[in-house]
Length: 97
Image (cartoon, rainbow, N blue to C red; front, side, top):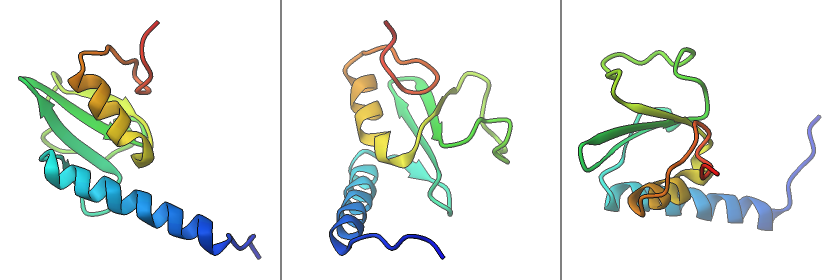
């Protein structure tokens, strides 16, 4: 049997998920039914964020010109804001050095 999380940790995680869902609506970020793939444009550039490599995802219709970033949903807001601010990111969504 797994370890049970404290209620405060569960509430914090659920609040984070609500914040992400609201952020997606506000910024026209599309998601798939399971909520683990995110799609958006910044200018003419298309982006896809997922917690799995694109080869593993069963994705139809994503163009080669789309930039794929492997990251969990809890990092979505930070990644989106960095891209909007013109910060170059690596394939995992971290700023390039």
